[in-house]
Amino acid sequence: MDFQAIVDGIAAMTCVVSVERLENGRRGKFRIVAGNRAYIDSIEKPQPGMKMLSDKFIPNTEYTDYLTRDMNFEDFCYRAAVEKKCLHSYAHPDRMPVWFNMTFLPLGPDEGNLSYCTYTMEINFEAVTENMTGISGDMASKVLQTTIKLRGTSDFIKSMGEVIKDIGEMCQAEHCCILQMDSYDRSCSVLGEYLSPGTKLLPMKHYVDDSFYDIAESWEATIAGSNCLIVKDEQDMEIVKERNPVWHNSLTSAGGKTIVLFPLKSRDTLLGYMWAINFNSERAVEIKETLELTTFILGSELGNYLLLDRLKILSSRDMLTGVMNRNEMNNLVDSMSKGDIGEIQSVGVIFADLNGLKTVNDSDGHAAGDKLLKDAAAALRDVFDEECIFRAGGDEFSIIILGLTEEKMNLDIDNLRKVSEKYDRLSFAVGGAIQKSGRDVRTALRMADERMYEDKKKYYEKYPERKRVNTKDDFIIK
Image 1 (spheres, rainbow, N blue to C red):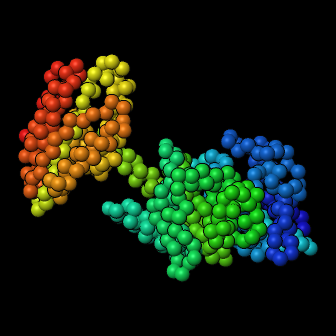
Image 2 (image 1 turned 30 degrees about the vertical axis):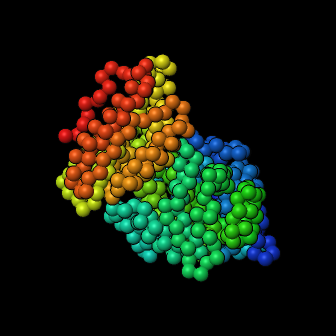
Image 3 (image 1 turned 90 degrees about the horizontal axis):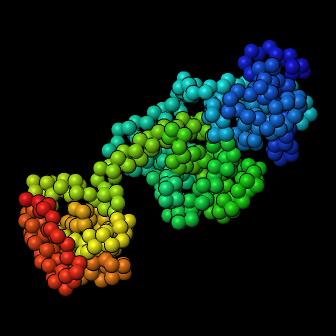
């Protein structure tokens, strides 16, 4: 067969790939037999950002002489050449800043243990949405359902759980998961998880600990510049073992035999991963095409969710100490006073004001004062739920708790004083008050404030050298 004549008759970048068939259905070498001028130029004169391992094209050379080994490319070539299927894919490999519009067509007849296919590609430097939607109606329906669930929800995490269940059932997988990665504190959290009925695989809570981020971080190298990792059989698993022996051992020990792993990205920033373990490998092409588009949407929606969550934190959290800020406290007090929250519950208010902050700032500088404020917040978290703690002023914190009793309040105050002893130079003036209804939260605030200043007065009587001018801040909520 004149392979050169075949590719020369095609205007788009095209080559012929030979696939070596081995015993027991295993795959051997993948070689670029011939290429047209446009394809050869893509190797010898690559466009910006498309650096090749070799810039000299030699017919009948393994494709890995030019590109890093790509399990997805090999899979498509095998299915086209050996199984005689016409295939299409539109993908953005991480190793290059481009999108590939790819078509694989079978050629015949086979020659001994060699099968052949054509590989035609178009390069886009920006995603072309029309190319991303060229999937079957059934797959498009599944992706549309995902989009609707995520866009029409007021509970993003719950919707993520529903989406991953749909993905698990579509993949006929034993386990599916959406994992978020936080690069700032190097932590991982599960946003959604699905376990098929009767599976012996364990949920992720058995694996996600302080060290799991290191495992998840290693997946980028395992994917090796492709847009995903699809492991369909033992031969694919051998490649995973070669690239990432630690994860391979963890995966197989947990009962994983096959896996499809997709990174979740938004604006080229890695946010986490989505995977399906022990999926139906006979539907690998359909699953890959569906999940390519699904993860594109998931990454975008996750990025928006995290951005909104970050904006919410910025608007409701005190950036130095991490507890809720004064604005959030005012909103809560307003809602309680109107009877929107806690009308039929008691409300407890505790004011905790730092003793001697000005002295620390004056003697050791504001960095030392900031550390003391952070230690104060840490001590408060040891005793109270973080969502109940507010930084009400410069050195003053308030704690507002529904359903609090007088006895429990006094125990918490005693506990706070004991916890404070763990921190250097940390001392609180504390006052608390209880009201029978959340509507009376302002009364509780005033009473707690007055009792706190009574406690502060005792402190400065004991340590007069630490007394500051204008001790009382004018912030009592009226």
